Image 1: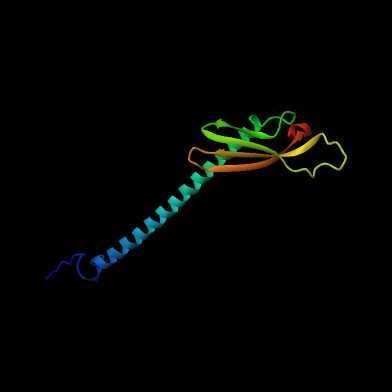
Image 2 (image 1 turned 90 degrees about the vertical axis):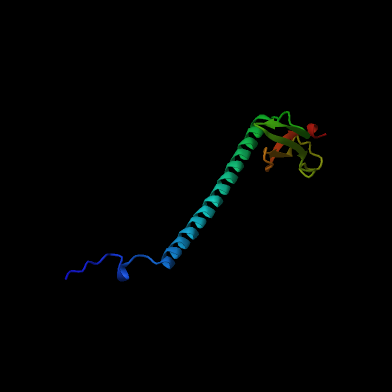
Amino acid sequence: MFRATSPTDGAAAGFTIIEVLIALAVVAVSIVAIGSLMSTNVRGVRSLEQHVTLMQTVRSVMAADVPPRAEIGVGTWSGKTNDHGWRIDVSPMGDEWGAAGDKVAWIPALVRIQVRSPSGAVMDVRTVRLMHEQQQR
């Protein structure tokens, strides 16, 4: 007599429920790890984009809104550029720049540029510009 066997009989019957659960657990852990990595990557890209935007605004403010050397003086200016608020503070760097008895026409001034994005991030840049000594007063 001839007896037919099916592929579901015996040891080659397929996966057990334990094997399926272990495979699902491995897939779930992999998906969570990939999701966490993507989330971290998105936050990093957003932070970098925000930094680049702030630096571009600082550069724009330095080029357009900081007075030229001949006109710069001690004081504070503020305004808005591309929805970013900015503030410029100019102050002398100190009295030790001139030699005793010498008349110095130009002295260094500390120029502080602060830019605030609409989201609240702040970039603070400091640089030095020369200004006429009489504009200090």
